[in-house]
Image (cartoon, rainbow over all chains, first blue to last red; front, side):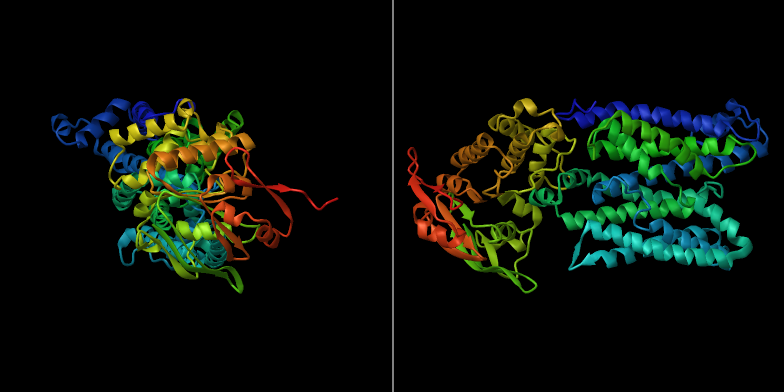
Length: 353
Length: 259
């Protein structure tokens, strides 16, 4: 597939693959919403969902129990939608970080946004602030703000003579993460019986959700994606080297900063509602790069859909494989992602980055 | 057209460039030569705007290049850096098309005129048949051609080249310089290049700037610069100077003091 690039090849790839991936996503959602510990048949599931839609909904006569509707519309659906949003956000953020930092190991958590969020969340749990200030939104908001504050510290540390060196940035991320980890360990040590809650949050989960969580992350994701749409050309040009990009007219420092902020907003939004779900942001962009080549005009849109599919699928497995027990979704993403990633790497031993 | 005015560059205590001034006229080819560590590449980086100077300034048609917006500068000036293009799995066509970037507004998509320009340049640079290939599958010489094509598509008034022939064999060296020359004659392009090879510099440049330890040792035509006593002082070796039998440019022969 890599061989057939040329005029407008990226558009041809998108025209073919966006619909295909959207269909896959549709069926993943269809399947995921239909399975669960309460036995509800597929037709009822879809009648409930359709009844919620404008226009179509009015013609449907509710012939099901209220509890059925609650399970589908207020428990399963918000969770699946959140899975889609978080998956999209993490995969897109990962793709951006890999492109800007020019580092194949970059994932959304590389600059410490997630550890900052985790510390914020842990403090909320430790001091029992859940219901203070913003009610149940306190946790995600605190996590989001502390994640971005961490990024700010990393950025200030890495900025030397008004210039941002990517190597310094990664190192600053490592240093700040190490420091925050120690504070997190301290928090855990003091947390006693709350330790389990904090640990579970850190492992990543889509469990504690309702529609309001989707409401918080959605605006960030939409705004971020719109901004990124206008910067895909620049991301491609950064790939040919910083100097080459500069001499072709890219304001390298400015573009990088905007992209890093956007990626961090996406990460912060995702982490604040779902904890740190690993591997999505690392492997989805890589898979897409390996299959479709390294044109960001292809990688980014397909990562948005690919991340959603992957997380919806992983979440479905996490809640059904050991029913009625539910596994942390991070275990599933790593378990599915690592072997497939390994397979792709072996199959295509090119210098793809 | 291009004025370099009292440029100095310091790294800590180290003076890499001292008080460099010269003018480049439109349509000429200027070569910057000098031994290793004489500041050639640093000077070119300052002229290209990517490296700020400690003092002095570079004016392009009366405007300090540091004050120009990135895209405005790229429409006037293209640069082939020593590192060239990273071998990425991006097609030759897409890479060359990136040269149109400074001509597009942030919201603007590639138009028919851009496509036409790219096709024309692909043909001119003789890489038309490679346009679907990925950059990381090309040889060094081919990649250098792609870099030149990308610069041509940029439609600059001045082209800066930092040792464009360093990693190439003699055939490809000539190839690259002839391509630049051809382009120059077609469009009245101004060329400033750093060259290691004095013989190539002598043949391809109308004006040579010889740097030594961060200062201009000699500036002038190749006949004025390629002289035994000057080169002996700068390079600490005694070259034999002969005249090129075909184009009459002064050429040096290394007689060597090894035996």
